Amino acid sequence: MGTGVADERSLVVAAEAGDRRALEDLARVSLPLVYTIARRALGGLPEVDDVVQDTMLRAVRELRSLRTPESFRPWLAAIATRQISSHLHRRQVDAERAVPLEEVADPPHADAESLVLACVELSQDRRQVVRASRWLDRGDRVVLSLWWLEAAGRLTRAELADTLATSAAHAGVRLQRMRNQLDLCRSLVAVLEASPRCARLTVALDGWSGRPSVLWRKRIMRHTRCCSVCARAAGGLSPLERLTAGLALFPVSPALPATVRRPSGYHSR
Image (tube, rainbow, N blue to C red; front, side, top):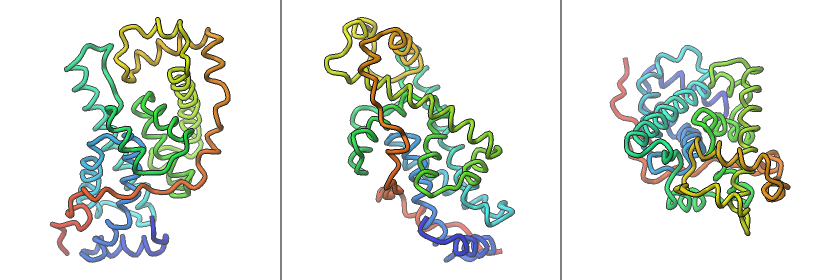
């Protein structure tokens, strides 16, 4: 986060006491963490800045409810994950109202892919993980964003568990479950992008809009489980651990309102 634990604690204590400058500094050093969580979970959706803004403003309003300054980071990450989950739920509900169930899409449009890939240098394998994450369930996408931060050294396992409001042991179970699902989705992406693509899979994809959804994930995986051609196309995936070296926080979008970077409306007691 760009500041030490002791410095972070001092900023939290001062901000809770009504120090406006400390609050601004705390928001500044915390913003990259929140932005990265949102970007990892939402995959470049244009609403990322809105979710970040809502998270930061909620954190400012609720800061005095934080009982232990040392838990600020998982507390803030938990607010971010709740905002993300709520946003994804609203988005899914809106999509289900607008289109038939079989065409419901959870990921960003095609132009959003260029946005997320332009903002950070990713290897081809990392890009594949980004595309695969769009096939994950809503909860797993949040867990994945936290796992990236743990892998990058920005969250400890204890902080990750606190963010998920669970024990370290159960957090480990959720992480492993997410990784298993992500590997299945990576295989799915690999067979879809194979050249040439399996002819039987092409037939099975008749009527697909090209956008990920739970229904089509199940249909595609049902085919790949018993297809030797797709099994070969999905072979040789790099272990996830090899993709985490050199990870960094996303640069914060310059489009975020100044009120997020320099909170207003916070007065001393």
